Length: 107
Image (cartoon, rainbow, N blue to C red; front, side, top):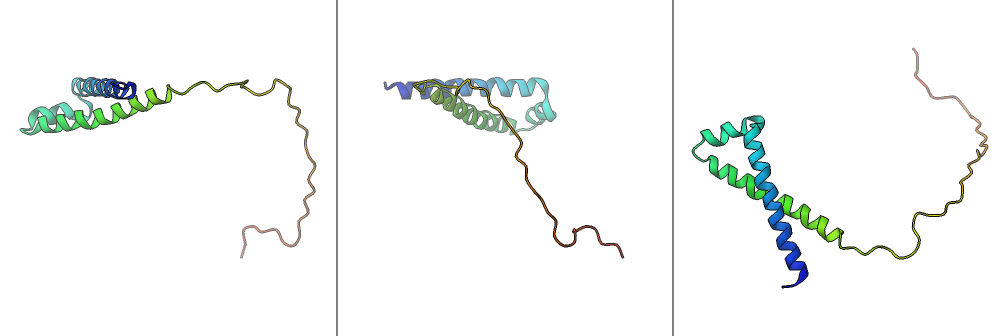
């Protein structure tokens, strides 16, 4: 099996595991009365399944994105810029006002 496919499968498994833990935590803490809504309805299992699948897709996508970004090679050469001190000095700018200065008009 190619490494990228194996990486994707493990990321999806980890994402859906996080989704199950997230849903269990939501039900345990009864956030926004979700436990009452799911357990008191005759179609509450559909809502729980939808939350599990949708959160699983999001968490799996995030896990896979993080895993792919971690595959990048380190850039070659020095990094961090030079260690030379930076000296800043003010630049004088002349400003002249011509005409009336706009402001609130009084009657």
